[in-house]
Image 1: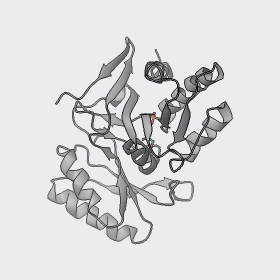
Image 2: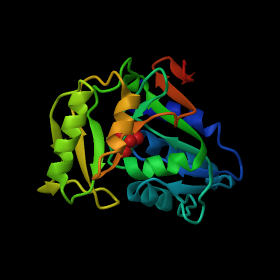
Image 3: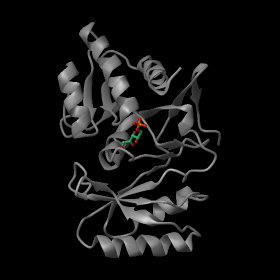
Length: 232
Ligand SMILES: O=C(CO)[C@H](O)[C@H](O)COP(=O)(O)O
């Protein structure tokens, strides 16, 4: 089974949690896009759902495939969000934001009664941090914000390059008009402490640590899909 087939398997298993009439948060990334494709087929067959997309990219795909959408302001309370992740640990803590949509993803997940993460086996880790942690920052004072992040990270025993994400000739810009700093910490032994600390830095708009947000994770591997629940 190749990587795409695993993503489709996880997406198909998540689709089984979708019921008629649901208000759905719809994630961003290649795995979430497989979910959108399968969801669109069910919508074409008569399933009635309304989606709130977590990015302009997801919104475009949904519109193209005929998945009905509303904004989060029109539908501020959602039944279920289905989204991918860059890393998942045994407590269902996540790193997200590899696709640059972490802020909207977190707002949408927080507005949902449940969040289901869909991923392939390569995303499951003992300790978060091998994937560079995306930190969305306001462009104003970005260098000062980066220095502040380095200082608080050092207090938690974390070091490593913190680089501005680039796109073409310039800095990558999120749908919200912010930049992303990617932090190569390698290992984040205390993700809960880092999450709280980052939130306290002026200039940090949001970070890619999703703590206590996922209800379950559906993880696809060569043998099929399994469901992870938090082990603590
Ligand atoms: O957080 C995300 C986007 O901001 C994605 O969910 C994450 O990057 C996983 O993407 P993919 O399914 O393509 O591996």
